[in-house]
Length: 118
Image (cartoon, rainbow, N blue to C red; front, side, top):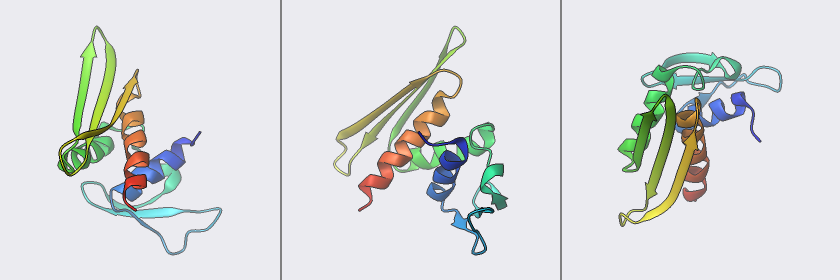
């Protein structure tokens, strides 16, 4: 199971983040030049805590023509994501519930998406 910094790094790279050239085993940074801009230590990325950060990931997923549904019912959060291929066929489904549902769904999607890019 990936740690939060590993998941955040995955999302940052999906957002076209560039690893800082001076990164090493003890200090790793990534530069972002989108909605979130700047150079951040991997440990300081906020995708897991900030809707502002996570919204940019969800927007990019939507721009790739995948369907995201976020539902709150009686204080309970559910997030589903349907991934489609170039022919418009549903090829993968992701579902999470709870406080971190959107974050975990985004992470699972990006892990899957990366395997499809070969």
